[in-house]
Image 1: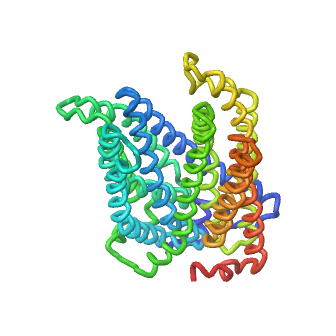
Image 2: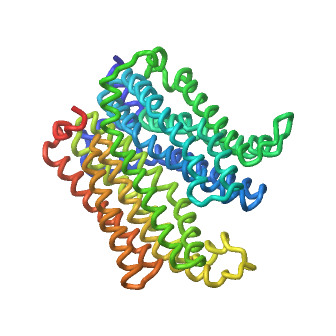
Image 3: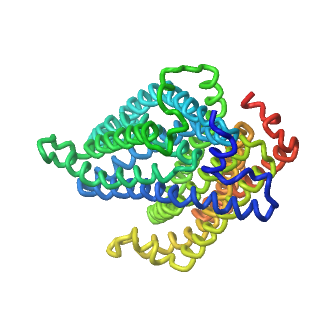
Length: 480
């Protein structure tokens, strides 16, 4: 084992318990910011890749855009559900760093990869069959063929896509997320040329059309994931974590432990996506302009969500580190400093969407569209509400991350389910349908769900932190 007084304190801030509250807060702000900047870069690259894929689908025609969108939604859902199931890897790795057991980091990583292999097979089969089922839900034969061709190509990248997210969490846990940010930039740089080559059959490759984008995504996911693993094994920054030789050691008990931490997160992510899809279906009942305005608002929110997502990852790493160090005060400081950082960025987003709503909406709408004015007016009204949604959802993401950092996921899952589906969808439907507020009512429901959830999650977090103090681990039955 490495020297405890030199190794851990060189890569992370000193033990939080040795500082006053103000000093802890300052130290935590610096440490979190150092993690946050490269994580934001990684998230922005991911958003850019998705946007580029949509633009390049457009080169193949509107039918390819529509079919590709269906395939992309199915794939993204699988990625997020799978990532949720293995999300305990990052939390446990951060805990290992906090307890000054660096050799455990690689062991946790490779047990997480075994868990990924176990869950990938049924998920790939489900996606493969899902492409066939699209023909049973009203898709015409042309759309059905395109959806299936794209889905059957991109699904082979699913394990690598989730594996890359695990690698990001590991890099964050050991305080070196810059490595994954560089890899994300490499993936972004490859996206356009590889898409183009496979779409249009350049350099001797067949002309694959929409499926070419799927194969390009699979190739890039695997390439960047393997680069991350090689980096972990050979980069000097990771020497003390001993990434050699652990993959072949199968530990069923640790795999089960990771699954118990992660499966509630997988359920949470999956039901969140399902809620947004149901909201979209309900929006369609108010007409084409309302549905288009909703899609514009969702796309805008997804772009701005890159920052809260990065902050949530930072929260898991920092809280997990303090959790491993058994520093109850450090856990609180880490959680609430990152909560404050998230709130600050969310307020900036509110200012942007409130001050420049017309400019934001104009990016998405063709002025020659016959529904231009109606769609634009509706989208602007949605954007005003979406500012509050982004704020509330950012708080909810951060508190979910803080609780994941202390490996508490079952109760947060129930809180999120009841808040999003009970309060959010229930109140949204009541406002939209019986009370006649239409799409705006649904959006206010979307705001209410994460707002209630975030308040309850704060209470849950403080309760666990206060109940046993430095012995907070003892109140968490999920990891015993």
